[in-house]
Image: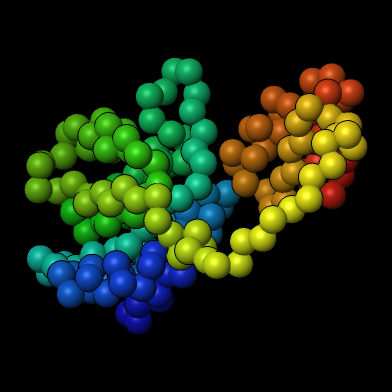
Length: 185
């Protein structure tokens, strides 16, 4: 299977990973976290009969997760691991690139019944290609024109955005403006 380069991981870091591992393929959470069949199809189409010691999938998880009081792991991360287990992909074949510092604790919980050698490699980094730019510019702010204490603008339908929207939509509309997919609330 031909490896699809991700635009999120800086090319220099991707090059180092490729010297250590044979990257089978890559996928980013926004491509599947609202449709888990996309992830199932990805792994069914790239699954190997036998994995070599250095075979790896590159999983990019740099988006917000949802946390429910009863759960000590993110809903999307838990669902991800359930699909991996369902498709019978060895956990050691996963390299998870994330900006969620502390995610190792959640992975340890999700992998508590796995052998120590069958666990994903986690790379925690705040660095991502979209963050490396020289196109920043100053914005003139006219503070007297601010009408709301907060604004929440949500474009594409994503699970964490819907959760936030449902928490915010009932707040005092004179204090917060909420827009989702072009419909103002």
